[in-house]
Length: 559
Image (cartoon, rainbow, N blue to C red; front, side):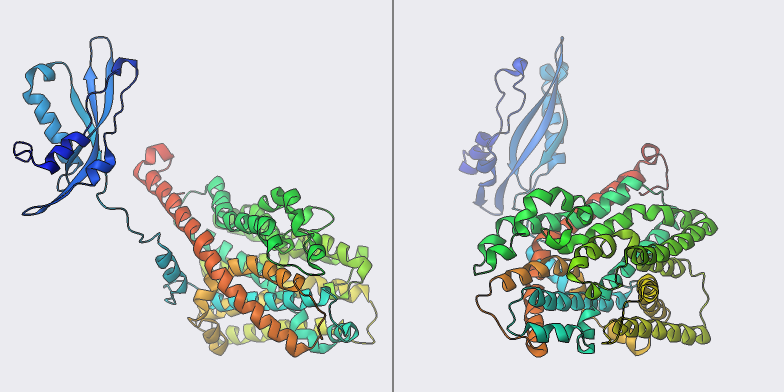
């Protein structure tokens, strides 16, 4: 009726639709019409009339060849793709001469009439997702507290490290004496916070893997590795670009150029950072671009060998436990052997200037010397997933006592190296370097295990507070950005300052606050969107394999 009445909206729909193009036999088989003209149609009559742009595929069966044209039409928004196909086929059927020539509509699709709203992919939604404090059933809320307190501890340790290594204090002697005293213990023990993350990584890896395999799902090694790489790498890539192209322009000062020499090395080792092998690049990550990402390299390298332990645990438990036990023994022997053979100290703080670089690169940042906590985490993930250990009150009390003894050993053992009359003892150094990290991991794993079984007590309740959940979500980005922020702040100094514990702790709080803000936006723009896309990708793959079991090779496989 609109065309017969020569109404403008109807004429625009006709005008926006495709016309039969010339040169069809020469390959000109697509005509998209006038998309914007169609969507711009808005006519208020008895009801609102809006234009919807549709594409349809029309088959033409010539005597010598068959051609499929992709043409467009503009229809009222109340119609859909099914209507388009039905109406056009009906028209063709009623036009007897055309119908006899083998012309038909194969398929059609229509566009949305409104621009897609930002919903699950919107900035606001991502922000609310990060800030949400609702704890999902079946999760381990105690992990959030451990993760947040550990990353806070790492930020604090790096704050003191940055201020100490800058040598800008007017009282450096007092600084060195403070580091050598028990007063600095709460800072120097921050190295154990890294082992906390290795423990959490092993626990979640073991628990989630065994839970998935218990559902009779097929293990896909490629997807297993790809999932991890996509999860970690985009944020690292963005940080790498920021370190190379933005950070050099953020400050200036007497020590600015010298302090940022390591960031200028990004163009030489970017490939190592993105392939997670930077911990093996000489002269070592202490003077490298994004040196603190050595942890990601070690974690990824441990992840690569994890199927050797996890798959047997899922399929042949006794074999898996044997491999796990052997791996644990090796993780104890190797650090002790390195310390004994090379006469290394068990702690970084105990290394002199000549040793520090070698201790760092040959002992501190290599997976074979840091795997102990990771293996302990896998074991507790295994017993949590399989529920193969029966818990009663007596065992819980005994477990808590052992966990406390382990913590006391780690703290007091570390303090022994700061004693003024302490002389290097290779046996003690090797013993502490070998067992301290696994014992620390046992203590944390026990807290997780006990809390999950309802025996966490006050410690479990505090670590499970909902306030930790949003901070836990940005802990990865917080780890990535905090060191770069500290380097910029320290390198921008234009005067020397007086060292005191209180002033340094105040600096830590300001570093932490700024890092949290930056990490929130870093996660919002560079991590959360990737996580959503990654989940969509893997869910779609699972759905395809479920819907087409013959093609996937296993009807129960969801990869």
